[in-house]
Length: 169
Image (cartoon, rainbow, N blue to C red):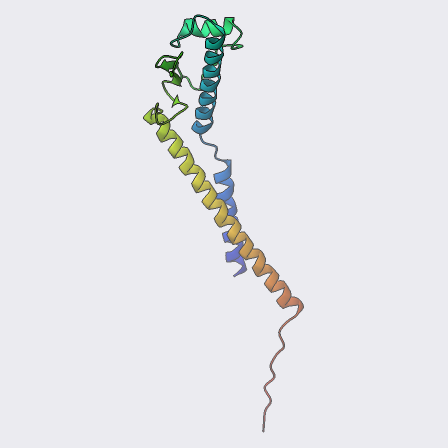
């Protein structure tokens, strides 16, 4: 019985360490970094449009250079992914939005990310759920093993009283 418990414990420990050591491509962090860049560019465009008599209507290389030269941006934000390309939808002086052609925009209802990004994020979140399940199973079995050891310890310290059978002969 002890060998089985030890083997199960070692098996679960190995599974958990493998699951926690595996670090997949992190599309969620790149997606959030891209949205952060979009937010910075959008804010810089709004500040530029409030200060300048000639408003920016769309986002292109020249307008990004105007934002840097006007000190609204320190530098043009680099996309976290090689596929990032910042553009605008609509008139930026009114209700237009800055978005990334790969990751989408700040409002997912208006400008959705590409299907590749959505699939990568879903796969990443699915992997995170699996790691969490394996970890929870490991800790549950570890707690059961500890409780069993405590039970055996107290049985050893305070053994149950033996019942004596009295012969009536």
